[in-house]
Image 1 (spheres, rainbow, N blue to C red):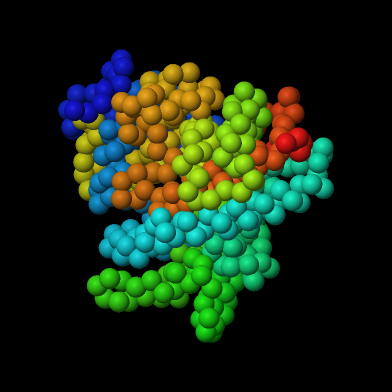
Image 2 (cartoon, helix red, strand yellow):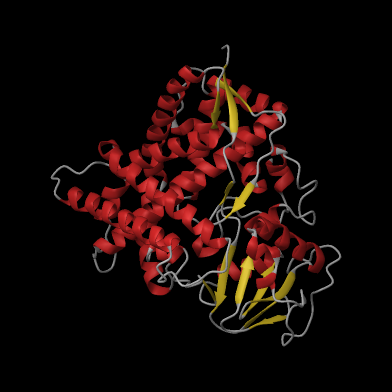
Length: 459
């Protein structure tokens, strides 16, 4: 039986009806001029229309879905609801990587990459994450009692983790070049999102900046791959695994372009999104000292000597709940648009080929229909007894279905290790009058620096 939200007025309609929603074209809504308003706009659709809302956006009919079972329908039926082939968006940056491609090619790449993130591989990478975190904490000795931007710190740390796990440590300069290019491209896309979009081929300064840094990205990654192929003794890292993985049926390996696109996808997914999640978690812990005290107590008990092993991760129960609650309130993947490839109906409402369908973890995670006091930070809500009976797609920070994030276990492991090691040694304090501001772009990220005072704990 499909889940029915309380007081839902909009189910059981004829399949030939369009979903109810705003009558005006949403392309002229404030959200198109101010990306921050897009979060409020989507939340208001869920609050006013319930499970399904329809609206016009420019030339497109859009259906916004806010029912867990209908979201499952969208995310599981990947042949009906496909990634939007928008040549001036993520695909322009990532090429044909796992995050953006579709169909048989996507399935082939998924089968190639999935084994790289199996448990045995994660155990090997856990020590790299712990080492990178330990070196950052040693540097914090110089910042004792001072205020630093934790968003910048977490970006530097996750960059170091990606550098170690994807490229090994001997090409740090090239890795930083990639990170700098990605940062500049995202800034340029951010500026582009604030105005009426014109074709990227038009040679305006912002577009020239995007094209320049994309070329830097491609050339740098291709140089790294080319140099790696010349080595006789290959490092044990993700790049080597990507280069050596073979199709089980054809024994084919990835082409250089496929390698480049997948390396770039992993770099961004493992760097940008994790840094965002860590920043939000640290901000929330600073605003909730009782939760921070519980996490520190757990870190003290599990990391008695300051070290952590892969086997100990299962003992970090409260730390895991903190990470999940931070991603509930601030999911880095805040929106998941799809294009309708063949006619279907959602909740009794028609969707036509070529329409757009939107699901939003941000909206579902903050819906009062599925969460008690949804705006309150309460990690305990993720205790098994509290989650029992919760609809599967009331919480989906890593997506779902066949397109569930291939690195979700790696990301959770990284969050656990970094948070536990940080709070084992330090107490981080955000100024009382500081409130984090959000910017929903490719990911949901802080809109500016997040000041944190670094205080060494007396152990």
